Image (cartoon, rainbow, N blue to C red; front, top):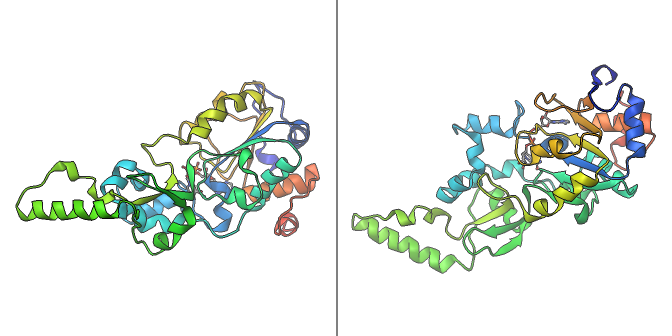
Length: 308
Ligand code: CNA
């Protein structure tokens, strides 16, 4: 890791790992920005890696893999999303050493907020409290009817998602059936109205994850401005920083606030004071176990720490 330690000379003088250690020890309001990379060790694919979800989508013949998460396409044909969603469903009660590291920051009173782009809701499993998390792209924790917005616990939808079977809202069912009958009749008579183009998604239940074409949750807009002003350290972990507006957070944090990146791949379009490149569970276990001397409360901590 020492070999890949990079300095952002125009800002803070981060030349040695001790500077990272001191930054962690001294900071009181840490903003942690996370992405899919912090959950890959549990077998949930990220989006853009070579083994990621998007490469799997390409293999399924989709031109643009992001289409799976396009609201417009969901409304036209929800079966596309329902046919692949099982791949990114969160495992029960699991969380990684990296999630436990964020929880440790919370326990030490140092966590200002964890802005997560993840939809797997694993932060909650690790004990990070709701007030400390902003789920920038929503999550699988709840699901809503696209037509009447009736909300249900997300887990209620899992059997359907696992079975690739579209779930419908009970309150919209009668109207949906009557619309379908109307369309059938129109088609029998040789006419069709484009008014009914989105009929396939009428009354369909959709996990409350933010699709392309949807606004970010209100909570994001309510907290981000104040948080970037108050944070005294930004740690970005396991994200390619390709999705706006979350990717802009790194630019919004004042210049004098140190920024640390922990990621498997370098991010060339952003500058950090320090880049710790590697698998985040290993990097953070090494950093906390050997350097900062903080014990991460996770069943795999010792195993990873002593694996060399
Ligand atoms: P991304 O664009 O797929 O980037 C992931 C990044 O993580 C890459 O830069 C990888 O190098 C890095 N990475 C992968 N594994 C590791 C690891 N073990 N240790 C350290 N770094 C690693 O994903 P982003 O999060 O940047 O993109 C934002 C999308 C991804 C959001 O809209 C999410 O909803 C979406 N997503 C979430 C999940 C999840 O909730 N677990 C899974 C897949 C996608």
